[in-house]
Image 1 (cartoon, rainbow, N blue to C red):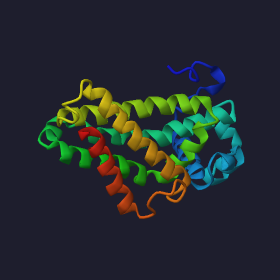
Image 2: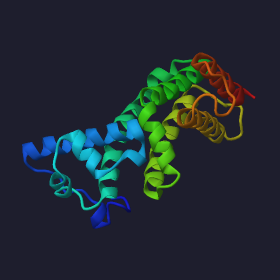
Image 3: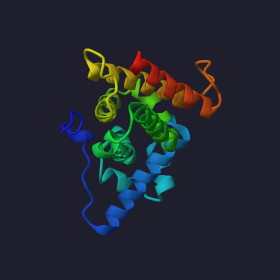
Image 4: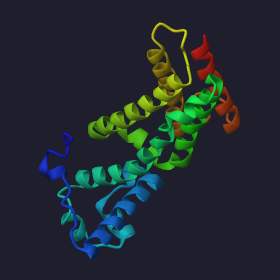
Length: 214
């Protein structure tokens, strides 16, 4: 149980009847859409009710506060992203790759994850700087992804000449992840990097490969 889940006003009272479950599912999907479209500033009880087609009473039957609703929506949206971490789980397949091939695949998997969920990730990144609970939960998701990324590259022999290969690969993940966070949150021109997606991905792949082979 998270710290927030231990506080009653931030908990969710699960719907039991089918009609209530369907309404709650619409609420969660509507909340995610609002975050994708307008960020946290657009996330209001009224906006969620209007988009989900439910009365405010239906929300307050499930949660006590707007923040509890927001965290439920956040968890719902992040669940789809976290589910894709399994792309790094087939250790047997990764061991068949050369180190260079594994680096290429790992970077492209990271880029793909950000690309497929760019709208929600942009909102989440910006929110996490001012919302401690989102920051805490998000940090757990990032560590999980980093663990999987690191394990698969170690399976492929990355940084094998280093005194501490795991630390080296983890650092490479943090650099690549940070670059994707900045590009997703603030746009391709923010840091003066390449505007072309292809050039960015190629540069990121070369950077990670060079860092691990230096």
